[in-house]
Length: 415
Image 1 (cartoon, one colour):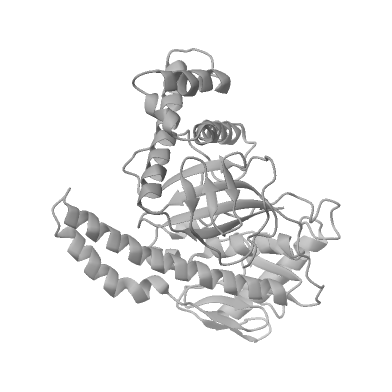
Image 2 (cartoon, one colour):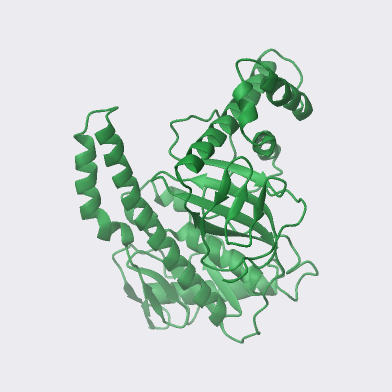
């Protein structure tokens, strides 16, 4: 399976200028190639192949006077930008044909130099790990990196990202084997909510930290200061960075908390069942801010990939399943209930239910039924279980898919 490992990088002034140039050149190649394909489509011409675009927009463009500065960055950066465009088009075509699961994917769009997030992707021909703990990037130099943990294997791809508040991150793609944990007999159904972030079928409740709500007072003050600055001024740019940094702190705290909670749940249970919530729909209601503050989608995604990584069973229960309407003791369906009803009594057996705990138990029973029916992949249900090349969702917005190349040094000695 493939995992991503993210580390904070600290480039100096000259390296920041080199990275900015690399971001810009990759963006120009993307836009030039996208423009050629759009114009060919509008004129009724065949789809422009990647080999032709590489010759016109990279090789010959370097020799022209208008694009001669493309030669100042690594050729790998430009080629990977073209490959990322090919991937974007493939996802678009697969989405139209129904080959790609999930929400519909739109066609690629032009990139802007005013985007607050920039990234480039490199294969092993353009970066290497050094003995002194730095990472060499072609035509950028040796980047100082804060190694929070050791890489488990040689990376096959590197994405350098600059976020909205000016921080730089290195994201390594690593091929690793699943870390199978000892089998347990415990299973858990999870009901996600707002009053309590998660309620487990055994009665445990995980409180909602509400990181955005806690930082709202400071965010309001910073946003008010930003609105008073003149557009285009340096003071406004500095104020924008302050707002972006505060939002980044909130996101980092939420992500760290999600990782700790999801890891604990996966380690404590052999099977995890969770309801498939319509987060995009809930994000358009009056509860939108609280829904986005909870971050249910990111949390469920972490549970899913960690279950594959550690050999656990993970099942999503359909969102149409009436988990809050059915009595978990006798199975009687008591009908829908408004959100303010937190406790109710079953009309058939008289059992008094906590709404969230009852829903978690129903999710557990429905998840077990799905597994028994053979509609969920477990370690014993499919020969391919544990062998599928599953990717860890990237913690940063990154472009493209990893490409294999020659091996590099695994880990950093001395850490």
